[in-house]
Amino acid sequence: MGRTANYSNERCSVAAALSVVGDPWTLLILRDAFFGVTRFDEWQARLGVARNVLAARLRTLVDHGILQAQLYSQHPPRKNYLLTPKGRDLRPVIMSLKAWGDRYVYGSGQEPVDFIHACGAVLAPRMVCGACGETIRGRDISASRRDAATVGEALAKAPRDAPG
Image 1: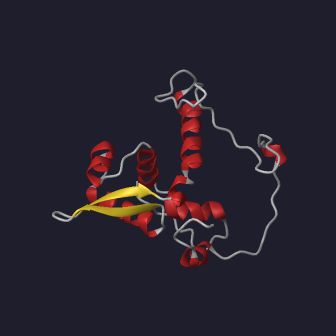
Image 2: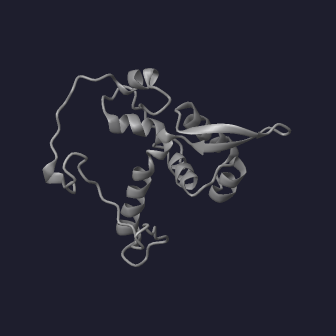
């Protein structure tokens, strides 16, 4: 499951996001972080990922400001990895991937996990326009291109914390 794609010359926000979180192990680490996993050994046990791969993915997530490492033991040195606001902003991505997998891999009634909303209903995530509140459909979307930096240039100057 190693990363082989190089998106550095692309001019695309999807490619930029994939260059940071597009590795399958990274997405599973994030999934578990949303379930409250914070420690290396717990990720390693849950995922069965090689320790060197897990260490590299955690380092990348910390380097990009998605997770924050906090030392909880000096001897031996041990860290908790906590989602930052930038990391928590990836929740819709994970929720959308889960919904897609539920629908197209498992099928209705076969979903491995249901998320229950505060209202008591099984959560069915949807995208809505931030301006008008309408559900987004493909036919409602158009694109307007801008002159933008390449992914490599954008990542080189990207802030490590969430804006604002």
